[in-house]
Image (cartoon, rainbow, N blue to C red):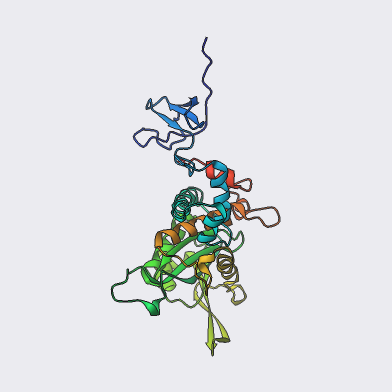
Length: 327
């Protein structure tokens, strides 16, 4: 007599299935192992089989799982790509391919969990880097993404959750793009429970915030640092919307996170040869950093996502690489 097939909590990974990535209504059972030794699964709704590694960085990977996990651990430390491929004895294109795969996996997890964040104080800032070559060295025929690359970051002050980032030129459009993400991921404010923003003197934030929130529901203050001979000579605090206290107008938390980006990502070194060569690689690295800082990095035993009450434990590399995205 045949055994009953055990149920699993993985959702269907077949795009054509009516229940694709949908937790409710799933009907998945285990069904042996494939030639690579991975668990084979059957969706009873669509009648198709798929591997437990589908839609994870392990899917159709020719590298052992232990090597992929080690590669991920090296990617999240300040080790350049060339250093990783030398340490693991891999081809540089293999390391770059896994950087993109891992980055896209991180992007999906960030997108799934970063929603309905409680209203609080949010700090905004930008961090500078460049792609392929610095702006002053550009030629007329260079790709438009080359040169200056500004990463807009939005961090919740109390939990230090990196809510959103957006990279590109320092333009109003990219400022709007990162604020649109904040608007989507944070609960809607009210006059009794307003959302509060704090930033540097970038005027793009004023227009963008005004277009997203009505004035009774938002408070906004800017901290403007004036410089002489590359040294800060005066600091001004300016109220833009609402009535935030001057003592509360600060961007120290987001500046600390931007400093962490420079410490943890070799491509953000000001004077280094490990700068990004493509925008795709830059975005993948930033998505991975966002996941790590929100889900893995702990302070006093808690990650930012635990402080927010979104997750109940710190993630590790194995959990991340085996996670199946679902609705």
